Length: 388
Ligand code: NAD
Image 1: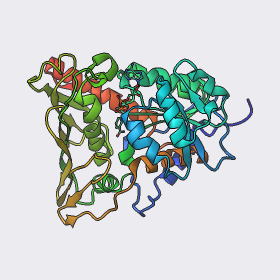
Image 2 (image 1 turned 90 degrees about the horizontal axis):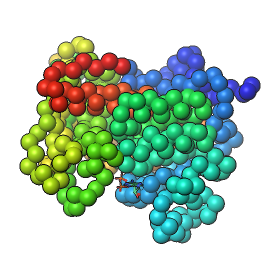
Image 3 (image 1 turned 45 degrees about the horizontal axis):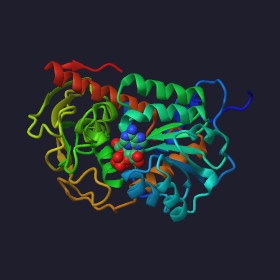
Image 4 (image 1 turned 30 degrees about the horizontal axis):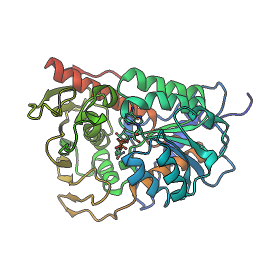
């Protein structure tokens, strides 16, 4: 086909996209380079371009999986977005379909079940399909969404295996659609400041990073997050991915090796398939070490960096609101923002502009490689080198 897709990513276009995307945030905070984390959504030159969005002012998003995150965060955020809106839903529960249809004024023709999902390809209202299902289902639905010619956002962690993450990227390339991961903190001012402090070495060379993300898992143990098949693992997959992210966006680098250790299981009724807690150390090529922990049995949410001439710390670092930051010079003074609204607006804008996503599938793949290496290190007790 003659038409060139915006996701047909030759190098020149990619560099242009990145340098523009790295301009400034709405707050005027320079967006520093994401370093090796950033690699765009490369697409091959072959054909089947995703739907033409060039004439649209707002892109239509369909949420797949109307669980807690969609209900409490994404749908409300989509009432505040400027570049996208809640156009459709995919759910296996007819009562939810009815409730959402009334609450958000969603036309019947934009409501799908998992069985009718593939028919979205014929629906011009839907530009982006946002996969908000259990981790082990991200790959299947991302691939089906790409085959329907729609741009995709997949929630974190991108996948439960490196192979699945690679298949997701490949499917999006083949169908010339963009793939982004729901990494909302790339759109959050305190975390953006950490990227700047670390990557631009504002306080000199980094000596050390510490990251922790944990919560106490309660209620019924009959949850997909405790099911190895659906979750891919325990707190590491769910929460530890934020620590991995934090270490990577502090340094702007990929870790080269990891050591790790599982914590003791004190609640076997919950943790018979996935770990209860895990600690790990990411080694970067310049000698920086990130010391990380994640648990389903305590509360934590911290990202700290220490450098030659100063330090910074976010605590809480990863929550939806109330993020607080301090540096060796005093408190950070940034507003609280609707992270999900900014994230979806940012991704929609990049699609409309034909630019690389700030949180591309390749970043998700990098993280899945790191997560799998952490598990290997914990299982073998050995230092595991990570290849990308
Ligand atoms: P949830 O359990 O509240 O919702 C999961 C949804 O998937 C439900 O609507 C459920 O009906 C549906 N589903 C379909 N098939 C299923 C199956 N076989 N088993 C279980 N559920 C099935 O989960 P959630 O908290 O909304 O998480 C969904 C995804 O979003 C996960 O990947 C999670 O990591 C991610 N998430 C991201 C953030 C973030 O801050 N970015 C926050 C929360 C969750």
